[in-house]
Length: 570
Image (cartoon, rainbow, N blue to C red; front, side, top):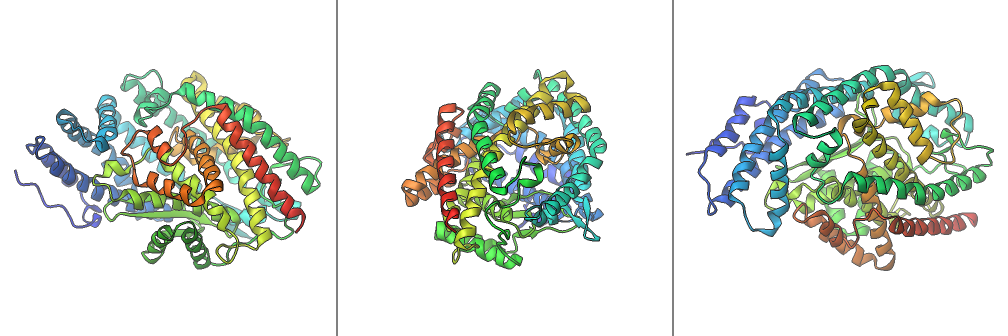
């Protein structure tokens, strides 16, 4: 049988009908294949996936960059609600053929295991449910992407308030914090209703696939072969017991340095050590150029890859009205290039975000050398190890002339980053515990019960802050967490990766070149090894243990105190 010609680029599928796309997959499914012809057949399937997924990614990128454009919204929804959910069935049909033939290639064993799982859990009746959920996710992005706040006589996108959150004037930062939070408080009922439907859809998907609850379904769907919900709960406890006290000590140090009686939420972004908040860059060009210098200092090859992205227009960094919130890196598999999206506002957090997303980029560049698309798709636990490790590997290079800052500003920024690291671990535990509760407790479908559960968890994991009179604002924090809406259960990966990244940082303190070398070896493996082996390639352990976490938190606290000592002399 002669297969239909594939387009040269993803543009050939940008406006293709479902029947056209499905025709390519069904033709491939009809081809005779055996052990001798398997690799050629896989290469054809891989190229087809590259082209189709890149077309879908480009539609998603265009929409998130401009959620107010109806044509871009329609193009994105066509892929996310009409094509990609249906595509799963075609992929499963091809996977069945691959699994039936099999291979003893070590670099394909993880891929085969993933395919077997996909075959086991696929149910045709879930296809329209996935499509509906994608439509609701797009609606969430539209609601949040259009949010603005009244500020200084104008309506501004919420990320534009970030510099004012860092003001030494407490009244200004309180005003900015309240202005940035108010749209989520106002949208609570609309977002809660939307989420009610997502919970119901996800529960039905799990039931259709024979699972007791959606959490159990997700662990299979995400191919979490190497850990269990019980392991995650163990990690929640470890974070509460090891990170919680360290975070409380950090909050006391922040409060005392600011000269406050109590620490309020609007006191968290201000730099306690600098009268004028550090301004890392003035223009996006400066932002990009500084990042390129930093990555070159970590490793010249990484700097070269980032400059390729600059030259090819693969960065959309600045905040603007109509742009979806948050930041991400997406991989354009057909051309072997990553794309970074974020909402920069001229604050140090922008630098951390770009360092993080660039770690994903370097993963995409390195793994693209692998022959098949499925080998390049690491699980989120590995993807986030790449990104979080880069934040820490780049930290020694933040000072000018390599980086953005004076010595004192670089030190205070590094101190803030380590404090944020402790805060993020506590936040990760609360988000994961919250999602576990939603999808395993019958009350998870009730909006009011969800809000109360969130408050209980924040009390456990968020010590040292006074939220008096701010219950609605505290509740609104989970509505701002887009992962809960768009990517359910995608969050514990950040915790596992952060623990791994701290080990990379520990290794780099002893042997910087060796740590970077191991990091790059890990990147190049993509998804060709089981998760614990990938972590070992990076020189770290996949750990849920309190002992490991306590050791790493102690190192963080020691480094924070060393940085404070430097700042006391400046």
